[in-house]
Length: 420
Image (cartoon, rainbow, N blue to C red; front, side):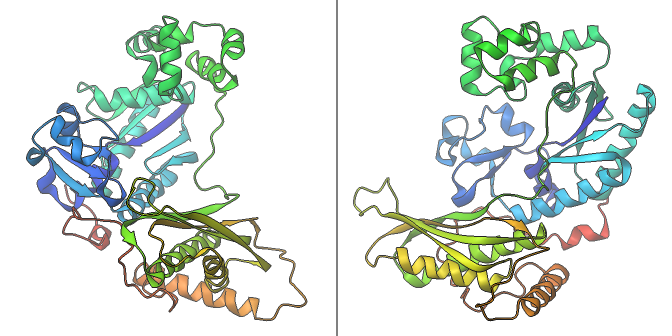
C-alpha cells in the first residue's frame, strides 16, 4: 500500500492563509507577467474558468470583477511547501516529494483502519500548523493513490480528508466513474486517441491487455494500465534529486533595449543557478546565456542567440557563474535589438566533492566556498537576497509584471503558527 498527500488548490490555499477574506470567493493565481491562470479555487472552477486560461479571457466565462486575480508568489509557495513536507517527513516513512504540493509515502501500518486514523491525524496537524487543507489517498499503486486523493478532495461526504482504495469492487466502481483523461499520465493527445477507440473511462483502460497497449502506444501507457490493475510499477523522480542541468529564465515585463537592464537580469539568473547548485551540493563546468526578442511583435526586429562558456574549474560560486554568464552575454549582445526574454543555463554538473583543480587557474576555491556558505547562512536567516553580488543593480525594469500582488509580501507571520 502506498499513499499520496496532495495540498488542495495549493497556490490559492497559500494566499488564503495570509488573507482569510479570500475564503469563499472565486480566486485565481496568475503566471509570470500575469499571463495565464495556473491555480483556481473551487469557486473559480464552478464558474467554468479553465486551467491555463489567459487572464484577458476570464471575461468570456464570467464577470471578471467577480474573480479575485492574484500574481503568483513562488517564494512564499515554496516556503509553505517546505513546511508541509517537513511535517510529512516527521510522520511518515520513505517520503518521496513529487512536486511542490504532492508527496508519495509508505504507509506505517499493515492495517487499513489504523492507517486511515493515522493519516486523518496528519491532515489535522498540517492544517493546524500551516492552515493548508490536504487530501490523502492510499491504494496498492501510485496511480490508484492519485485517484484516491482526487476522490478525497472532491467527495463532500469525506470529512477527514482521507480516502482509500483497497477492495477490488470499490476500485472498479471508482475507475468506472473516472474519465480516462483524468488518469495520471494520460495527456490530451493520448486521451483523444483512446476515445477514438471507445475507451472513455479509467476502468475500460484498465481492462485492456498491457502487451497490446505497449505495442499500440508505448511502455509508459502499459505501466499506467498495470498500475490501474493494482501493480506498483511506476517509477518516481523526486524533485529533490540532483539535476543534470539547471536553468533560470524569465519573460520580461516589457521590451528591453538597455544593456544594463538585460545584464541585471542575467546576473540575477546566474546567482539563482549558483544557489541551486550549492543546494544540491554540486558544481557546474559550463555556463550558457541566451537572449530572445518578441516573435509576436512585427514592428520590431526579432533576434535570438546564445553562447556557452566553459569554466576552468567546475564551481558553484556565484562569482564564477556570474562572471562567465556575463562573458557569454557580451558575445551575444547586439545594440539596437529589442529583448523580451533571457536566461542562464548551467550544465556539466558533477558532485562538489572530488573536483579536479586547474593548475593554471588562480583564485582561492576554498575561500570562495566559505564565502558562499556565509552568504547562504545570512540569506537563510534574514531573508532571500539580503546579500547579493554588486553587479546585480536591482534596477528591475526587466522583472515580470505583478499588478495583482497581494498586500502581504512575507511569510514570517506563519512562524508563530496558524490559528484556525
